[in-house]
Length: 448
Image (cartoon, rainbow, N blue to C red; front, side, top):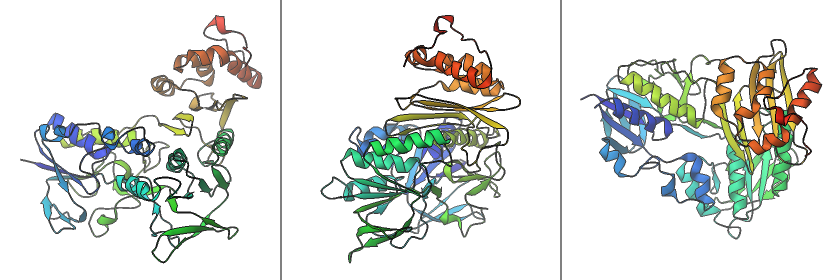
């Protein structure tokens, strides 16, 4: 019987396993050094915050794996012998495969800071990170202050986790505004303000120089590069991005760059070896997407795609239009298509922006200044329907169409009852247009 081995039990690897089983009777073994069973990484924060127990993060009951004949091999892969199709483990055990899927995910970036391996320094990606956080920051008696290094999505999640237990947080962000390499200025500035409103010590344009530890190797403070200031702390969260977890491949024949290099069919340079999820790197970008995408839904899509190929239905990976969602403390964020920041803004790209004067709600719509084609939208504090924007992007609708029918994409009719006319009127004024609202009963500007 053909043996499929999957290294990694995250969303990409487990999706592949499920779909291979759905379409075949092949022998499937999942290799994991992290946890015995698949869990939702995005839910780890809610375990720490007391909203869930760890078992609630597991989408499938433990009996699911035996019932579906998906075997587990617990262990750390040290080398892959692709000539003999053999995995070699740290405990000296081995396992042979007919086809191999590498789905080992990411690991937190470490940039060679002095003291970065001290006790109390951690990322927030693996279950072991959650266990470390519980050990070193169970409350504000044990942890008097935490310092977070890096202003991305994981950093803001870790900050929210810590302040939920009343642990003071200092947040070091090297950029001059939070996530301004991704967000347009009005959105980045709104998040800056929101972070400060939560009594988080946000330090913009600030870099870490060194982590200091005591004689037992336990974190005691950090040193700021620009000023030399020393900040006392018990925990340091390193959230300055992630990188593919592929160190174990360095002596293999599998071609790597930053990640495991794959083609559009998620095949590596070695026959019968595939890579999916955060650790996979496309040899050529797909449209404007990055060659590595550490995003939950792309991992799931890759898992579904590679399963088709392994089950004799060779399928190209086609992720479609970019979208993502996140939460910045109390503000929900959604993005569809492409809305670039001022730093990365494309030639001929224009914005239409609206921001609520009192609440943390705003919209940025990106469009081509010449053709008027809708390119993408960011929303903060406003929930939208994915399928509507996906359709408009596929149909190359103009921005005027998006404004006219924006209410179709909104989950909250009360929001548009109050603000749709105001948003459209602002666009008409700025662009000398005369967009008519879809619902005539809303054709007036409501007071805020």
